[in-house]
Amino acid sequence: MPEPAKAPRYLALDVGAKRIGVAVSDELGLTAQPVLTLERRRNTREDLRSLARLARRFGVAGIVVGNPLHISGEESPRSTRTHAFAEELGELTGLPIHLWDERLTTQEAHRILYEAGKPRQEHRRVVDQVAATLILQSFLDERKHGQQPETPA
Image (cartoon, rainbow, N blue to C red; front, side, top):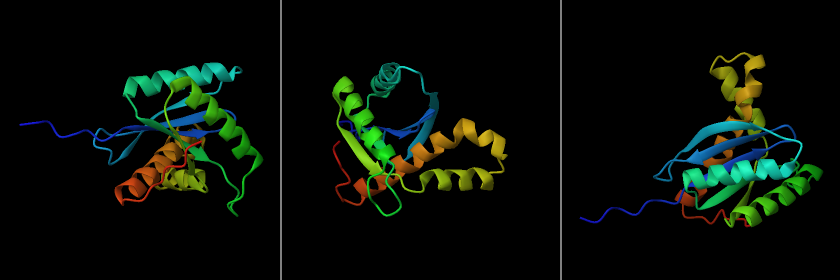
């Protein structure tokens, strides 16, 4: 009996100035799981190399990067920096990069942590992971429903 084909796995990133939240999809491509929060280094190249290692470790087929648009949907200065970061990561890994609307994910992540009973001072360590998980779950849900969420960088 042949093995069923595995769904492609994705790594998702919530890229901030100080931290990068990382999540990965499960092997069935159904759910997003938090992985870690990467503290940003002075040298962006070190961050990119760390993320490339994670992509190899999980054997991902692509990387989903949260796109920090303004509430209006327009590009923000932060989204311009995120696009450049995503482009460099794509060049380094050779993987497709999918920019994904991340509006309000950090606020939603804080709400989830509050509801889970986590004190505000503990949020910093995990809020970016939760936001990356929300970004990835949204991406996976769109794929599951047959829509093409792919927005190559």
